[in-house]
Length: 212
Image (cartoon, rainbow, N blue to C red; front, side, top):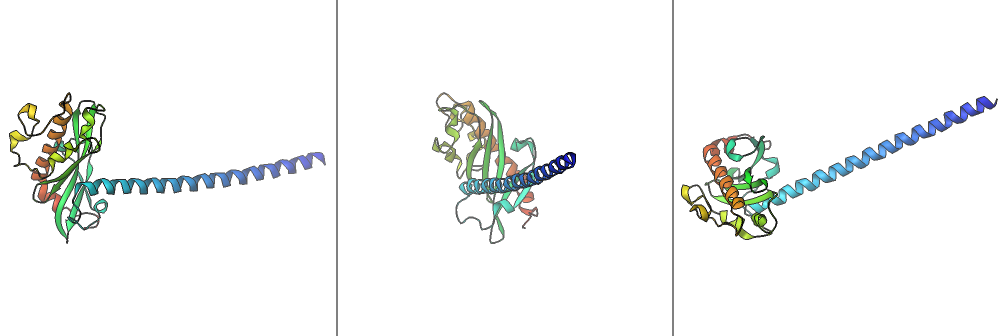
């Protein structure tokens, strides 16, 4: 009798523990899914905000994150294919935002977004990741210095080939006091992104995008 009661008690406890475990796993799964969805949404909003800094308001009317093509070329400095965001206005190509990497920063790679209008002029450049020295190389960030705006409106022909360098190298772009390597790397990367655009403009603007 006692043995039977013990068995029933053990079975009951096991059943309760099993149900508790299932409920707990379910709650954790739901929480993780909800958290993951919020993270994805936050990341998407951050990307949208970053891209919006590159192109002037009113210069495009499509959703950039839904208009991507994969690109990969040594000129862009990326190890793997990355999305290029195609901007259109009234169904016509307006600009492209390229992801480029300057591999030769002072403290490592510098990651950039480079916006190029359909006519080949730069709409804007922003640094989205780097490990440059605070107070010196970090002036490539717009929050630290307006230097990155010096690319606005530039193209392959303006300045000419020799002008695409820092002033210490007889070019047209300022360097930072005590930090020449960082701006030199960024200037080279932006110039290379323009060279890539010039060579692949037709391909970029005629490739079918997911919402194209």
